[in-house]
Length: 197
Length: 103
Image 1 (cartoon, rainbow over the protein chains, first blue to last red):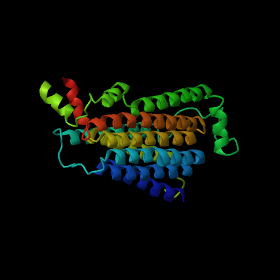
Image 2 (image 1 turned 30 degrees about the vertical axis):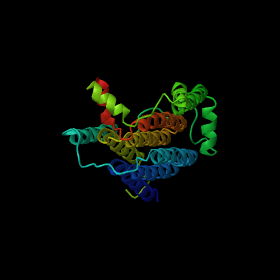
Image 3 (image 1 turned 180 degrees about the horizontal axis):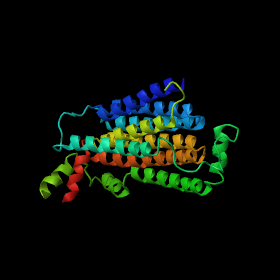
Image 4 (image 1 turned 120 degrees about the horizontal axis):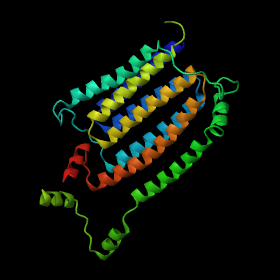
């Protein structure tokens, strides 16, 4: 049964990942990303990480991909881009070689250890001390990883402040717009480029 | 083969997804799609962490996945903010336009 689940979820993961890379339309890429995220969530459940599977669906599929789709729709960049043209000659071949190498390296490392994880089994914070995985996870996050947990909160505050700062319009430009001195020209950047080059 | 799935299979799958994400990051020009490829790579790594957590019977691997999720959320918020700020000024910007920085 686990083999069946692994094969189906793994196929969904790989097809979704290929869809992200191959789709010419960003919206299709985002939807393929959802497929991969769900596949990974199913694999989490298959490995008895039930809490992480739920969080994966809620945070990734529910928040991050929706944010991607929001940005795509907001900016109106949901037109297909042509993938036939290769901007740099030989770039795709080089990228493919890098990709194969990135795949082969961990697999070779794994094969050299006889397909087993090297390292000591856990003494503290074991996964199977009884009770559901969320209990073990909660205990370890608030004891052994407490510092990392607190740093995480700082990171979230910084991200919020950064997002607000990026979304805010510059106050100087606002004043100029009110006084009618600033005229946003859509081609102004291009005009500057032509002048400098 | 019919027996339980070897944990190593999960690791091979994760490295395959990671490799696809890395290739996409190198090939695609659209900054949004490049960002999605980064998310793919992050997901592959979280799958690896969960698998090692099961292999070594250590809940620490799952704890790391929680932190990876938080970092991914923060990264998406700030990264998409930057992308919105750039694409508002020049709607057709691609990663190739970084060459303008050459001066």
